[in-house]
Length: 168
Length: 436
Ligand code: SF4
Image (tube, rainbow over all chains, first blue to last red; front, side, top):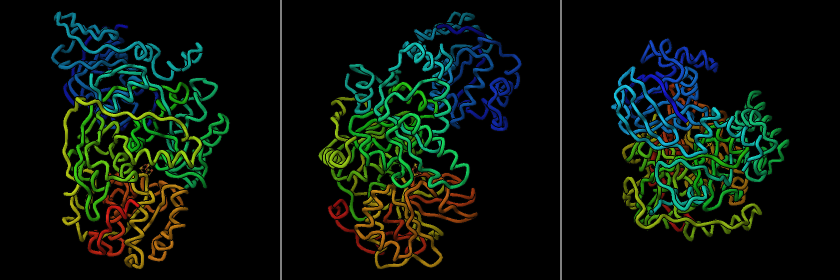
């Protein structure tokens, strides 16, 4: 499983309020949420992000409320992976469960500048900056976690497993 | 590699010889829990999965406790979704009003959790069962849905903080005071991502009810779970439950931390140094000794919840209120956490003492704890509660205030109308007397 795209870089403590401001929580439509994604920290994000792009950030990404809308907005904007030094616990769980690939990588923010081309191997956790040539090693995901991300989230994953008779 | 107690339970349920902090694992579940707020959402997600039934009819528990007995039409609809799902899927552990109690008191009482079990619940206070040496943690409705279908969930293995308890509690100081003190010490995010493992010679003196109270509030320090070692008291508790409930009459496994297990830090706590503690609005970490809190005027006292609605809590409250009167203008509400506790309190004459003192004793419900019903605060009102959260607006109007304390402080304060050290009302009984 590989993610590859242009980096959007942010600092520490990117909270769920800037990922998707509360004033837009009256909808659960992913496309509409995506159109306001990161609005309060990076007004150009929603317009310039393209399918496959990667968010690179510092510590405690996704802190704040437990709203599942935050990873949904990021996923729906086309982002293929969020690489951060660390994630807030609930964001981490929510991201995996809705099928947004994320990778914890100590010192992630030092790896890329905005606009660099980034490649992430989710199985091994290897991250490469194709623009600068820098490489770093995060923790890869075990097969079942890759399965969840590949399926597009926990519900889809379980559905597929049950359909194939692989329950339990 | 040496593992913490939590890590050992997780490894065993993932079928692995060892795990380390940060590792992602898929683990087998012994119980999946939901309530009338979270289960209806999970039931919707469950329908999307297309599973025919739940993974094990006896390992899913559904408890209508938050807005039940039905507070209004919306609550009634939510409870109905749960009831119909339980019936359709043949779920054994659905507890209707009349046999239900607050989930985190009810689940251990019914023997649905035993030492070494792994439990997830779509409710943040699922961490309560760490008291019996189980791993249990709160999750979202999506996790609950997948858990009901598959009987598995994924976890990121946490590291742990070790709380080394020494000495013995004295006077009116209780398990509640210990956990309020700890949260004051490390802050509401002091244990973020981590386990809180309680250990040391001081553990032996803590009653099971106190351990439930302490583990219950681990989430208030941001922890993933709180856990106690399995000792003589735990075994005695497990035996008593097994004698009552067929569901508890099964083998269980005792896990203990390996010698040399790595902890992110160790926090030593001398129990004899603790006094009754009060957490001021609007964070559980705003903890002060009662000596520095006395005199703040209260409008309401609430004794109950999954934190302090157990029999020992009611005994303490009744001991202080017996033969005395709730202050004029004060509303004192008591919520036994389960029907069995209620009945026991009736048989022991506790309910009589409380009602004679002027307290209103209710059927089990979460009720006012989350500002649901049965005791909502008006603008500017203050309540002293034995619950676990004092966030802005938790018990009613956004400009109302909640102070957290033990049942002893709550009962004493009901009598005087302001925050009061129970020692001012009467001398504390011996620890043996409290534990009975
Ligand atoms: S009593 Fe309060 S904290 Fe406990 S489960 Fe009910 S609402 Fe939650």
